[in-house]
Length: 386
Ligand SMILES: *Cc1c(COP(=O)(O)O)cnc(C)c1O
Image (cartoon, rainbow, N blue to C red; front, side, top):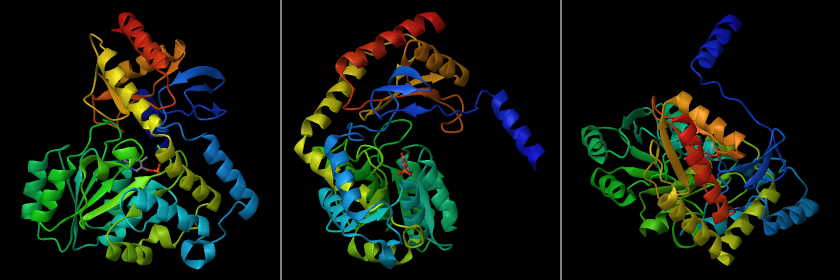
């Protein structure tokens, strides 16, 4: 086995696809130290700059002092703390539901939702560019797993029309994590109604960013439906960790009983739930954060004009710069790093072959001057590399 593993590692290295970690010191913010190097980063999903917001820190510290660190048990034994209860309600109400269910991570939420709702007689319909954990969820559920080309709703309709599955679930990233484009939720919902399917929206990159005060994809499109199962992760714009699910009451009751990643795992530390309640409060108290992010997105799109590489069409905080060749993407990322700017290169297998890119992610914590620096560094790198 070790020989085989070594051979696979060598193959990955040879294809220029070896990944490496860099050690972050200090807080998650635009100006960071990675492996000891001072860098201006456009890399995190902390879209509102809440990961080190004083109000979140204070709420966490206070909760830690009062209730300690670990939850001690799962939610269904005696780990469901009043702080979890409050965070769940606050999050759910913020996006238009009366109750929610907290999961420890988005990955676990998707595994739990899909494997609870679907079995062998059912079908999951999935956009090809969905996040990896939705794909893993499909496999875990043993449902028929039917993928369609990115945002090709005519292809989805053909699959739905031909399906005789007992239950049908369409699952999409509301904002696609490596492309930044937004799913056409109204059309998806219409198809679900027409073919008696349900719609799982993974709003990992929309919650906090899109919609009124950052209420996410449902507010962005002003939609609501019994057919929607809404999931948002809380380690991104919310600045903390975890995920929550909100849906019609029957589905909520069902998930609490049957989502195995909810039932068979220790609840996350209650102090993090205290931080989450504050995240929602800050989103409402400081709408200027969301506005500043929207302004930065518009600024980058208007001013980042290069000859060889282009920004992919996106209105979200994810602004990928298309490069194509994986090796070139890595060289560009390295060149920027020498200039003191960190933008990660995203390569296969995270994205399809020959679609390597730099994943620029913007945050309300960035200033316009910092975005100007990024654009200048990209233009300089282009003149040297391309
Ligand atoms: C990040 C992400 C997840 C996973 O969420 P975690 O809380 O980080 O486990 C799920 N779906 C999408 C679309 C994501 O971007």
